[in-house]
Amino acid sequence: MGQAARFDTMARGGAGECETAQRVAFITIGQSPRSDMVPEILSHLDADIEPLEYGVLDGLGAEELCAHAPGPGDQSLITRLSDGSDIVLSKTWIQQRLREMCQEILNDRIDLIVLLSTGLFTRFRPLCTTINSQRVIDRTIEALVAAGQSVGLIVPLAEQIEEIVHKGAAPGQTLGAAALPGDEAALAAAVESLKGCDIIILHSISYDEADRALAIEASGKPVVLARRAVAGSLCAALNKLGVEAVFGEGEPLSTRLRRLSRREREILIQIGDGLTNKEIARRLGISHRTVEIHRARVMEKLDSGSLSELLRAGVWIDQI
Image (cartoon, rainbow, N blue to C red; front, side):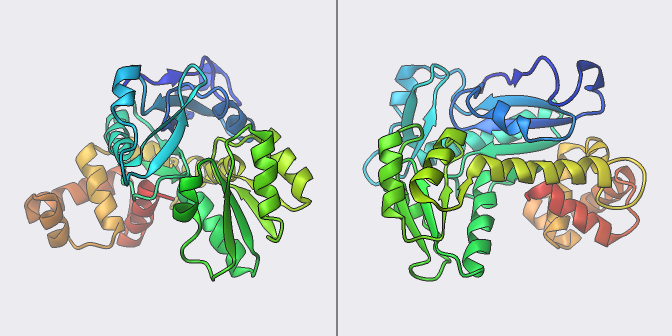
């Protein structure tokens, strides 16, 4: 899959602090590093982290990429290559590559994963606390619709409009339009088509502050930038992992989670789902006694005194 792109120093901190900083993996569905995106997200953080970048398409040549262009009936995702060009690929293929990568990078002792794409609907379960940008934006839309606001969603590709427009919203409360990031004329036209909406969301994390400024000027409405929303969720997650420790006193949760083996992390996720030991054994294809042993080790390593504490930790190690 390719190696992580590592920063020379930590965000908001010096290299000497790397032993205690949270290790955050930023995963793009394109190629890394994303100098157009990640530094801006890091600028919103008020925490010491060690950021690493991974690209789903890292190490792939033009011939292999062309082989995975969307076919008839395929859903599409647009992403950026290391040379700054954009490419449209099969969503199904990208999602499979992403699943594999999320499992591989845990060998780099990652504390938190940030999925830098808002076009992914499949529920991923990497064995690490994960910020799924799609879920962050979904929750934003849900909150706005619940407050009675009509929401205009701008996406990069016209074929994404039907898929992206929030299916759980009341009829007429979400509308969609398409414009590529950085295309001022297309963005102005998209904003014009959504002028009846109360608020506009630049749905793709590829849209930047310049796109947001243009949309505000053209619409006169509040405009939500996806990468800002993701940065806010990242700040909250780092606070939980590093400072509040989620439960109890003493070491941060991230320090405790690093002690868990891959199998113990799997067990903790199942505990977070509320499964019994027998149910976990059936799901993972292991014996009931083996689950009991792993569960005891998890409780010891997390310094957890009750099932409720394990349940809360299981929620955090899954997805937020």
